[in-house]
Each structure stands twice: as C-alpha cells, then as structure tokens.
Length: 220
Image (cartoon, rainbow, N blue to C red; front, side, top):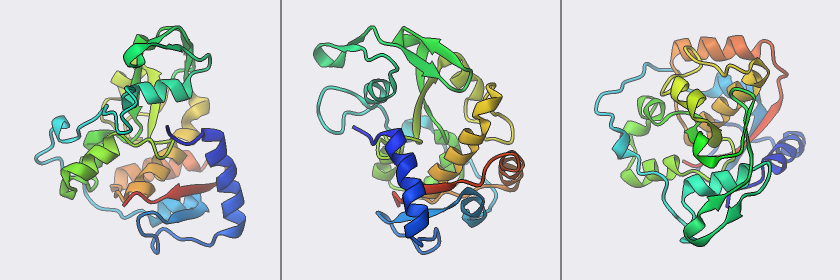
C-alpha cells in the first residue's frame, strides 16, 4: 500500500520547518524539502528526446507485494471516496471515486484510468531512456508517493495522453496548482529533467499559486 496523501502533506509542512535538505544534495532514499518554486528551479533543463520509446518498456500494473491486487487496484482502493468491496483476486465492486482533473464523481471503477501524473513517454523523454528495465518498472508502479499515480476519469486521462503542462492542464482550473506542484514533485523524486517550454508553463501556473513546501523522497 502507498502512503496516505494527507500524511504526506502534513509531513511536508513539518519537514519544511526542520529539514534543510536540497534537491542537489539528495541521493536515493533521502528526503528533499523545499518550496515548490525552488524545487522547480532545481530541476535540470534540457531538450527532450523520444527516440526509442515504447510503452512496453515500462512494465506496469504489477503486484509487487503479491496480495492479488495490481498497482491499478491498489490506487483505486487508496483513493476511493466510498470503499469498494474487495472480492477474490482483488475484484472490486461498488465504491465511489472523485476525478480531480475534471471535478467528476464515479461509482463504477471501469470508468476510471490510473494516470501516471508524469506520463511514461514524458519520463522517457526526460531521462528514463537511460534507466534499467527494473527502474522503469518501479517508476510505472510507484506506490511510494501518492502524487505519482492518480485515479481520474478515462476521458480526462485520454485527453491528456502523454502531454506535459505546456500543452495540457486539467479542465478543473481549481486543481491546476496541485497538478503543477505534484508534477514538480514527481520529477524531483525520479531525477527527471524539464524542457524550456515545460519550465515556462510551470512557472506561469505557479505564479498564481502559494509557494508551498513540498516533501519528496528521492527514488533515484
């Protein structure tokens, strides 16, 4: 199971006051705590390259803890507004969910996709092309940070596809600050770069957002 989203937020505020970590000094397993504007500034900036990308290079929806629940099911269980019933082989029935991208509620799990907040193709473009197969699998099934994977409407996820904030932002405008902040957190966690148009878009979004502290445990 992945950590609780509220607990991560509370930890961020506490750590911002007492932990002087920086993105540059962090190693895998270290915690980085800094204002989101500084986190954006700390991300490396370079051109993206999609050469060689195939979605199959990111093995996903695995069952890492062998409890019969795939990564998809784990996210649905964690993010349910009303808990579904869990049957044999982690079959989920009932329950309800909220899709923050488009401010919509769902009562049928099959209406939801599990979105990689930073898409697999975007990760490849930004540094994952040099990772091992195991590292890409870990990224595609990241339950260690609640911001990495999110249950959203299938329609909004497919509208987003593999776009970054320069060309796609959530239709629910009230969620855009969270989206940009979480995007930066995921890129920080995995040591991924941004390109100049992405940097400009994120800077523009954050100009209208509180400069909140983020708390990130580095995955690599």
